[in-house]
Image 1: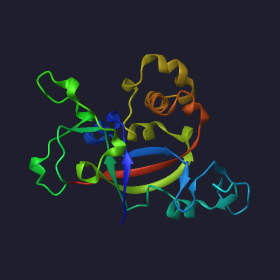
Image 2 (image 1 turned 60 degrees about the vertical axis):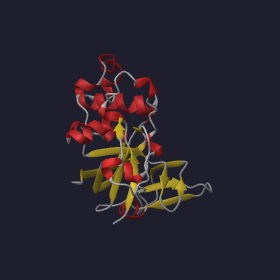
Image 3 (image 1 turned 60 degrees about the horizontal axis):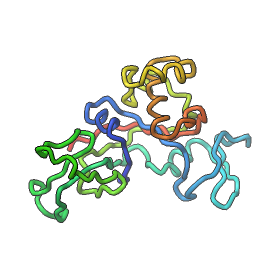
Length: 215
């Protein structure tokens, strides 16, 4: 079993805490052992499922099973992901000090009660969260690769989305493409996190299923 960090936005951390989120999607931008990829998609070579161009600009073909078992940067079933999220500590103790002496606050929980001193809060980006400050650990249950638009309504719900989450004007922009409330809510969220054109680009994504590990 290996353990890796993974970043989540505040709305998705809330969905994790509520037990509504059991999937996440990440664009295929790198492969373990190859690093960054510039192109990735379905292979035309008989006997292979996917192809990609590596950092040396060389094309590589790979079958689906090997892709999932060897090249996924998020691990395989049984591996764990520890969640990095935006957080704040008004002072930082050494990680070996007792838990009770650490004072941490998480952006997903809202503003802490500092008696009107919210302006003094300096939220630290999730990328800078150390392992000892993590409060959520996920166990990978399955991994697959597909196009973003292959997302089903059930998948969107497993992503922690619902129709109520999307601004009403997103329905006109994404509704006809998604066809269901949770799907266009996910499309709206995806676009807000990855850029306005990112949903329409329909990239290949890692689909990571997981369960929350009891602390």
